Length: 196
Image: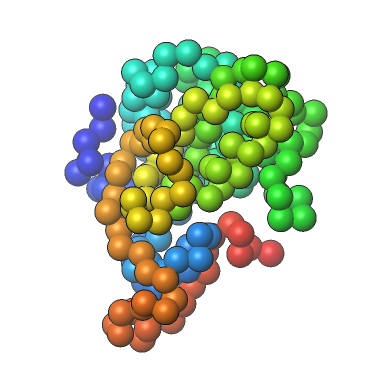
């Protein structure tokens, strides 16, 4: 499996890990932003990440039927993990601010669903996926992501396992608690919820 040190080298090399002042999709501020799309745009490089993550998933989740990923960020990683583990993979999309299944996708009643994302910070998108799974009377068995940058104090996912390729401890701040040095840096909103 890919080590943390090697993973960080790859993230920086592909410019998937950048520094500045960012407002994350969660609304929290950070000095670092992870754009997994930059990593995944290099399949020959990112395959080390996806192979390593798929092995971790296989070791931790013995029995599941379906992978669900949130659009946009989770689509490529969900597809790749589904391909490696030979599991059906679907994604949900935001319509009027809420996740829905479109394109003929559905979740069978009583099926066991693994949620696969690119990055988990607060787990907000993942929990929206959980609500969608419940509507179909199916069960969420856990969460997997390329990058877990969650903190216990802001993580909304409780009592469920999160499997990640890389766990990063990157400080995040609420707007009212911004450090002085961060206030001086121009703000960027790169997350998919902000894209028009």
